Length: 287
Image (cartoon, rainbow, N blue to C red; front, side, top):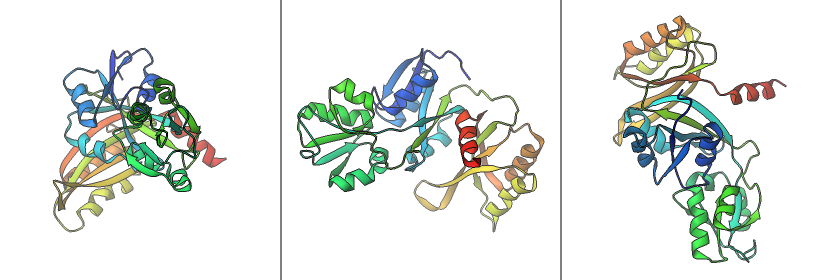
């Protein structure tokens, strides 16, 4: 991994969760807020940023669909991962209260992670471009009927009052980020490696079943397998997968060779070390 990047791109505005994640991993780096995921990817591709801090999935709301569609063709490499506990606050302008607010705006993932309080308070959810941007919009409207669901830092940045604290539906709400780079930087072989890749199977009977068989017979643990439609066609599917191990490890090497026999596309997106959060969760489950 690049140890001292000068600039980190992320989707959203200052004080967004992606901003917090970038600061946590690279506290000395400058950040580059981008309006969309496409803009964040482009900033990495054209050299405006050295790396990108991109959310890929949330423990409550699931995968970030836009990112999964961009990753296979972006030409970027996953060089690390980071897990950030998510704490949402309901915030409004000075003088507003739970009695005055009628709407709650946030990124669609934020709304999805705070369904219970939205329903409890009878608020109308409004989808915004991102969580921090929703706080800015509420501040600009200066309307006590408008509220935002955003990180605590956003209330400080935009001068809003926090009306309800830690409103996420689950205490274990966590977002997983991947760190993207133009450079192909693989972690050294080791037991804590993850390998991410995308593939398409050939159009033959039981192709997926046969393609996956090599991982089972070689004792390789697959931690994720997701399908994505290609080009709006129901007959064309790309799969995103994550497995434990390094491509140079013999079991994984054999499994990938078997997969390649049944696949018409196989692209390794990254080989990187697992974040310590995974081990902590496994420890908690064991206890």
